[in-house]
Image 1 (cartoon, rainbow, N blue to C red):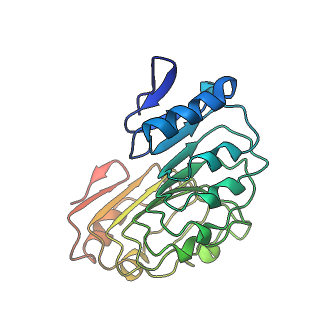
Image 2 (cartoon, one colour; image 1 turned 180 degrees about the horizontal axis):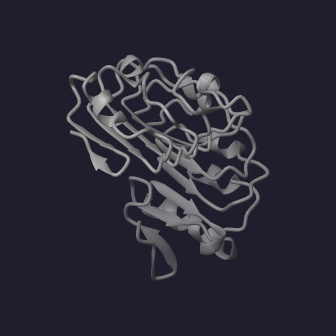
Image 3 (cartoon, rainbow, N blue to C red; image 1 turned 90 degrees about the vertical axis):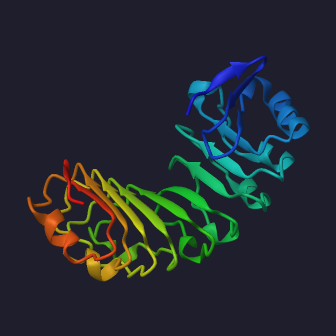
Length: 234
């Protein structure tokens, strides 16, 4: 995701699926004007790149945005997101108010840093890719993780459950990646939950026992590629 200054502005061609301009607090109005005049469909922001705002109010001047990506920010208000009817690609680090994702129905790709008060992800009928970061409930169960039933691709990162119990079946899921879930010790339910799986990656989950990948692959007849704990299975 290279970010480079071109003339006055920070730009990235592939940070969030569409060309993006960086929003910088010292010249916020100019950045917004440039995005509007050049019809740039995505914006990004980070303190490391000059974005120090506590709200996303500037986005209200860019109602045609399709992509929004902010990291290392500390937001007190994110209501402006609901004024972006074309928003398809979204990610923001978790120092933010809770979000109602059902109010963002056009989302295709979501990087979700989980917060318990968030709601509405399961209502995203058009979602194609979901990355769930830091799902870490006190119960250490996936029971509270509500996902769209027709989701094609899912990544789970830094979650704390030991098993996949509690996850609702996703019969259409084709791609699953699980990374850095250090409590995870069993994948036994995976074929029952995701019978149509074609692509599987499980990495940096040190408690998953040796041979688990082979056992799971034998129960997934449509599996085309599997990599489990440093070893290719299929």
